[in-house]
Length: 274
Image (tube, rainbow, N blue to C red; front, side, top):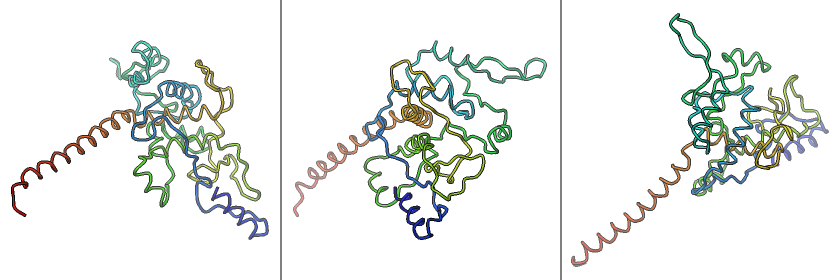
């Protein structure tokens, strides 16, 4: 909102001639309500499975997840047999064989999600010169800085959802029209939530009804964006729940330990004249 107001002010000052933005994103990501937020947050397994479906049917055509092994999908609630069947739908390169040649085979759970392109150059050539980023850690790598005093409150709320907020806002931000007079490079698409500039090479990837859900969840761009953002958060931090549980136990231990230290101090010094 502040970015939009700044652009409007520049329009009025310049006789309605649109000034180019000097900061990105133009609009800050909308803070969403996630089940994994806060010190006691947990992942919604049904949402993660829907997010995996969106990634597989839409995002995997351009984006790799080379640091995520198929076997970790059991943490989403799938059985070992289901993971094996899912992995077998992909083809990976292996070798060399006895003849010294590389060959392709169906993936197994110990394999990692393969890249849709053989190398970075091929990825860039197929996407207007911009290679799509790997999605393994995207939810932790992407996030907009939250200035003072917001970041102070984040320490107490344990806000760590900047990446998912950004991904959701970016995927739902394509319907914004660029302000009058703003120059958008040919072959790029305006998105006020894009952190790297006023437009990006990726066209709008999602549309209503594009992915079929079996659990009756809304088949809308907003829901798709939420689900895939949550899935990418899990991919980047699969041990989030264990980390939070461990942190809570440590805090309880420290409180009890501090109490014991205080009582011990009272006991030791109770017979000493002050």
